[in-house]
Image 1 (tube, helix red, strand yellow):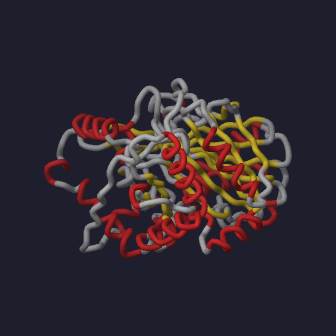
Image 2: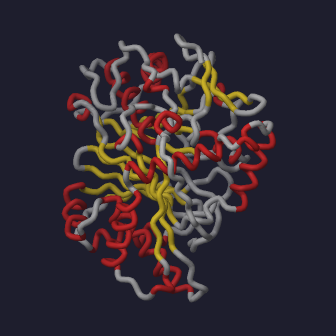
Image 3: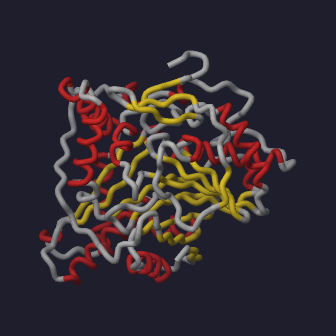
Length: 422
């Protein structure tokens, strides 16, 4: 990597699996959007993007194949601003979009960015979108300071922002061995390629927090238990052989390790229940999820998980296999296992931190995890002030899980405003 200009750098440990998973119909893509209180002017947005990329070189890249691994290099092309489309988070092809691994969209009063997951995680994406939106507002004549997730464009990029934090912080002498098996999936009528049905519920954080406190759970634990309970009861009604129900929960590792890297730095934890253990009430599932998640969601355990993942990458037999063999191996593994060990996914980015001067111009943030290939309940959560946006991304035409989820919340006293592309 060039010391001054960041001309090229390696993919981080998490990013290395994503190119091998790519297909004509699916890529691992997520979206972060901002709804403003005025119409977006695309020419100003384009100018803001050009300025922001000079501050964020880890996004100003294209992906290239080496003999053993992919790598990122500086992208000399001009980034595009696109009018938004109905079907979000569609697949990525490395030679499209000028080679950029993100797509900036606008429509009406909304700015949205789709990110290829090899580039960054939800936190890094939120920093990018927040900094871009702040610079756009400045070009509109607003006085927006830096702070929180809004970076100062006058500052130089830092080494910490470019860090492969997995390699830096994985130091455990213990390896964490997962024992996951195939679980229940609520399948339905599959939509065509590049089609994603999304449903958004806008709710009050204060109302949700009060309900979660009554169960002794965090928002993430409560939502995960809700998804688990819905799948559990759906499977029970189908009167088939009962399988475990599992919910995958990505965790931001920056809360455990001192870094502000803008690249990937998450690990996926799983909570699960076994229907053969007997009848579960919702209250019991909330306790089960809370206990399981708190048992593994700590610095020692996640460090051992990172260590295990790096051992796979550094395996001497696999390390020097040519890239095409690695790609075939990842593609085959993903084809055979993929989402088989996960019934649903929930990724909670938590509260967005932006200056108060910027909040005056922002109605809400939205976070979409992108559709799965098998799971119809892939959920993203993001909060700005008292507004919580909970999104479902669904690869099926059926919407019974989303409907049941939000109906339950309404019955608990939560006011829910629904938006959808259906």
